[in-house]
Image 1 (cartoon, helix red, strand yellow):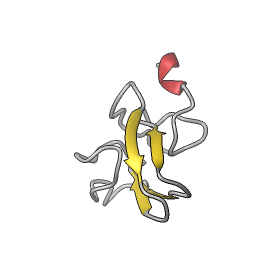
Image 2 (cartoon, helix red, strand yellow):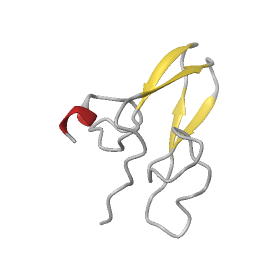
Image 3 (tube, one colour):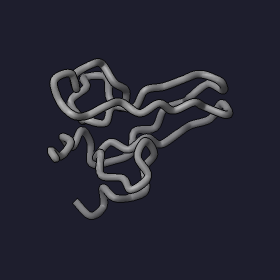
Length: 79
């Protein structure tokens, strides 16, 4: 299994809107981090859907190593 590209060694804060769907980049190659732009095509990676339950700032994982994919869990501190 291939490993994702580290897009950022810090979380990526985004103001999300309640009820809106977002597609988190799992491969790390998207130019529009933290969201998918289709760069994963031809790989085994698939973007992960995130539906905002409330309007707030969400800290999306940029290192792609989080044990709770989509949001940051501090894994970037161990890279």
